[in-house]
Image (cartoon, rainbow over all chains, first blue to last red; front, top):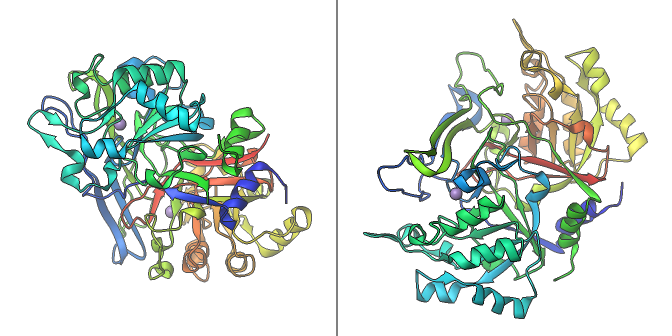
Length: 259
Length: 259
Ligand SMILES: [Mn+2]
Ligand SMILES: [Mn+2]
């Protein structure tokens, strides 16, 4: 059959010279979802409603209906999610370029820093230091923030206190710089948001959302198994559901890297 | 950065020597869903419920909750969907091997036959004839039935008559042969089911479901744009949502082929 780079890629996976890493949490009613201040609309919890299971409702088949928020579990943020991206072309999950759904990734390990300080903030200096070891972040790459946050239990994962969530994320300056000076495709985290838990107090508020989506870039949240990816050399497959004018989507995120 | 087959694949897409084809219908309330006899449980229609849109429910953000059936729109069937696959290991969308989510595809063009006869059935003889031109179908490949059915309007797409749906699909013999003699990964169609509209009257009933899922193989339905894929040389990316014990999932299906 035809010999080409796509077939070579699939063959390398089948033969084991590339490995596939599932970066996705299981979608279940136990999955923590973001909680906003009570004056705002809230995301639905995950609901799985059985239609039949080899029974009188369907003797030969098992299936369910599901309800989720677009920003539930491991999920993708499209530019239209944020007011800064609301007037961009092709800004929703059904219209964004499908070529963007397959792209290389840089993984920045901040796990030690996040373990020491739940409010750890990624800075430009931190990334520039990472680049000294791993090379300059290239245009069109994902930047993934490894914090090992996905290994925490549900309560520590959300880490809600009286004054809101305390989880690591990027500061405002590094997000503007990654978008404008590194031309990244998007930014991904292991936490519930691309922004730090205290990001509503930053200037501008929620700088990851602000700068990424205002420039037509993407977000990924609730990633896991980032410790199984190399700092460079992996690609991400990120295929959101084609929801009509969808602002985001739960999705299966795969990383593919050399074995 | 690291040079490997995964990076080569992403680079070929970014540079345009590979093209990405979106094989997915938009998920919207207009999407036809399968209708079962009234004594059985039914799939939910697609519902998209707005939470906020830069308004008093969320001044800076737009998002929705969505409800879908696991078998709604362009979707994936896992072995646990059918009673023949219910006791297999790793038979649900959250447990199946992620390596299977990237695999080559053979596209069999039956569009002329389906246009002439909505009850057209794919046979072993038809596939053996296809193999004379395109080579033997290799183990681990998807087989996709191109019928151009996805180009029809909603009423002709479902094509419901008093005695049920009339849409093309495979006969029983070819499904058993593709699974056992060609060791395919799965079977995909442009219609609402992997089986023909009249497949409940076949022996065994619904032979695509019966043989595929009983052998741990997969189904894809409501595909579109199969006319943009070559007969061989494309790969499919099929990443179902990681629904807890899910029987299937709406998903974004991408084909990748030489430009
Ligand atoms: Mn989000
Ligand atoms: Mn199905």
